[in-house]
Length: 90
Image (cartoon, rainbow, N blue to C red):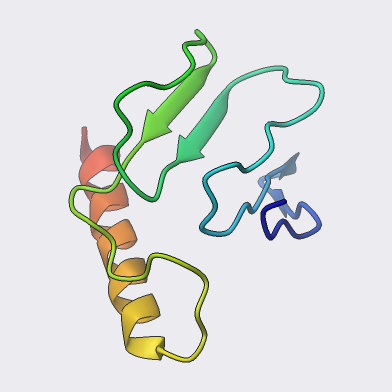
């Protein structure tokens, strides 16, 4: 079971924080559109018209939740921010 926390709301909609896990749960019921942020590139992903997968542009420095190395977490966060800005610019 991945380290999943109580889903917070963002812009009035629930979001799932699966941490850095390979098996984060999908919303139930699986309705509407879902943005799935991946921690690595995958060769095959389940196809669904309402799912959008985004993988990092390079390998993430932190490969698990490890609060003993804040530098890795900060580097991973910075990579995610840079990728998000790139994606949002189109």
